[in-house]
Length: 455
Image (spheres, rainbow, N blue to C red):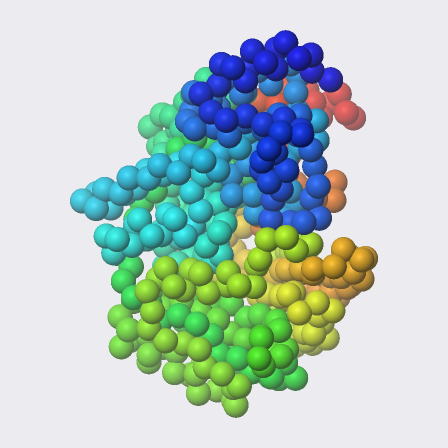
């Protein structure tokens, strides 16, 4: 419990809106994308800049408050919200400035992908971000950031040039290749373990109209399509990023699809995509030339807020016949809002050494994930159990390592696997920048003293 006097003093000193239980807008601000998460912070601070974040970290440290950090609120695990503590809400921090000459952009952490892309595309520029436009840029980038440009330009975190970070001891540090280099290394994949990022600077790239969309087939053709896909995907140039997925398409029904983005010459893209677009007997071919921002919002209708979400994921060794058979057995889900996904990894993503950034998983061919979503809470047990069964069926084909942005919140059983060979180096960073584990509402790297105390 927090006494009223320091809370009042803290709220009065903030340069931003703050909310407590029972106040107008409190419930709206504590609610995040995943309806299964229902937590009640004691205070929500809607920060307007780094000064507010500094004040929040100082206050929470003095009061011993559990602290969470919200960017876009799309974390499947709900780490953005805490019970009984302080939620640092960055969603109002939406400043952005594009420098078209240097092809860089400085952006604040409250921006969504759609807001970021709209500004950079005004200059014909973009960088790798995710595939749902309502996702926040900060959480996505700090965990790695897989998106439609990943084969050509690597992960979102690979395109970071610099970050400003509020650390647990109340300092505002700039981290890049020449300042606080160790912290910069950890920010690129470390999932918010080392502080609150208040500004991100990215390298941008020329991206004009793209060939984007997908080819859809009857779900009964899942095995046939995936056998084609395992030959097609590795042969693609860097300009084409692809994924295979099963889902329920409105107006068509259950389908297996190969989606993609070709970000080079449209004429050349037509040639590269021809084998896919002429394979089999698709029920729909949705590939077309389109603005990049249109492609970035293609999945938005399938990821609506207010549904219950549950995800299981892991990198897999390859698409053997047995792996394809196991995937196909679960091609039809109990909910029409659920996806089974195989993201092909390669290109620029795979050419970054595993130890160059905190994100280590550069050598895997496919990232497998199940995105289960349903509207009725009474169906939670059925959907969660189906997802676990699907995951167990794919387990024999998995490798060590999981993408931290896809991790659910079940006691962080895979936190060490999320950081792989970089784990010990990240513990050393945690010891340096957050030895008391102040920032623990994440897929947590425990500092040595905390780990020893809990042992």
